[in-house]
Length: 208
Image 1 (cartoon, rainbow, N blue to C red):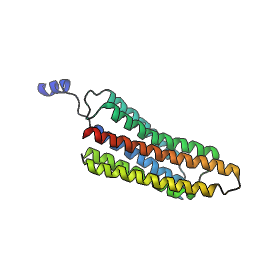
Image 2 (tube, rainbow, N blue to C red):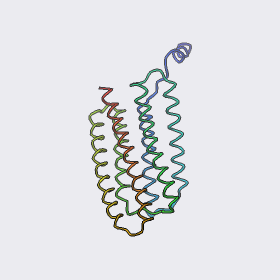
Image 3 (cartoon, rainbow, N blue to C red):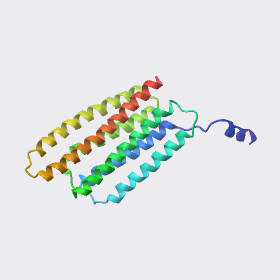
Image 4 (cartoon, rainbow, N blue to C red):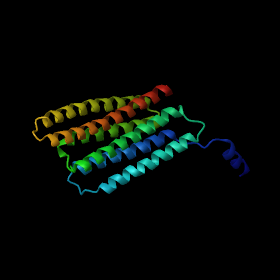
């Protein structure tokens, strides 16, 4: 009993920082999925549920950074882990910004952009898988997940350009401007996921 107490005082608490990234990525993935369900699917509209997921993600983000800041020993430098948490939260913030814009414009169905929402979901799924593989030390698989995220991002840019081309044929200028902003924000979410993938690749290089 005394020895155990001494160990708890002297030895640092063992924290699985890579699992924390997995959990935050999963939360973000669920937010992206809920976003698509809300604006694309013919599901009952419950914005409060989606905002609740965003609020929980903020709490997790703050708790993860607090724990990271209080720890002396980490598997890689604190800054690399902190940047990843930060960019994951930026994905969530970008979703919130999109919701603010859509709510202001009073547009509540975006089924015409279902392909973009689907590609965002696929990108987040690959990112979460990448963090799981990082935790499992399957580094080559992580790099394959990153390549897939980049490929999906390229597909999203094509879908974005096609959607813009159709939009610019519209005669209703307020409609064009509002939807252009929505498309730009969808592209921003994809960019933030891509940044997360780049930071994940940086972590792999640091480990190797």
